[in-house]
Length: 145
Image (tube, rainbow, N blue to C red; front, side, top):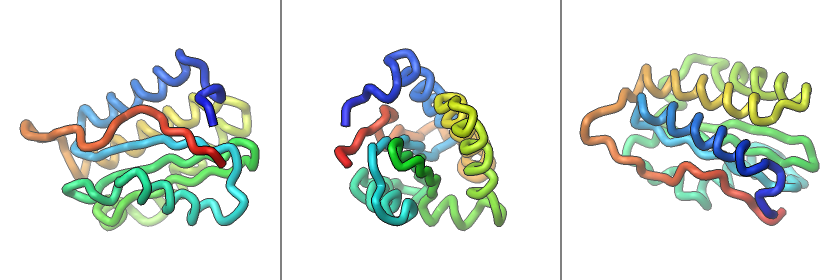
């Protein structure tokens, strides 16, 4: 799938939100877009999470925003490090914020707001340190499904 779902400016806005969130924490946030997700969205997100190597971060604090455009499916998942820290219902709260914006056709706003919320939690539990390195790329990835 090409990057045509977002304009170049929209892609920059999303990447900028990731960079801003990661500037305050040691976490890693990624966004992945597929066209289709014929099965369970959480399973698809977990597969992409693994294929992107997100489970290989030092503190296991990666977060993936997964969107299947044509099937109108969305998931946000975190690795075991962040999952063990965030309060119950956190991922559902993030999903509610994002999907509310998606329902109004504001995909960039939805992803940006969700990324900011995740960044705040990552900052609380995994604050930025002087020796922190950006372990994963920040650009949006696109699948072929």
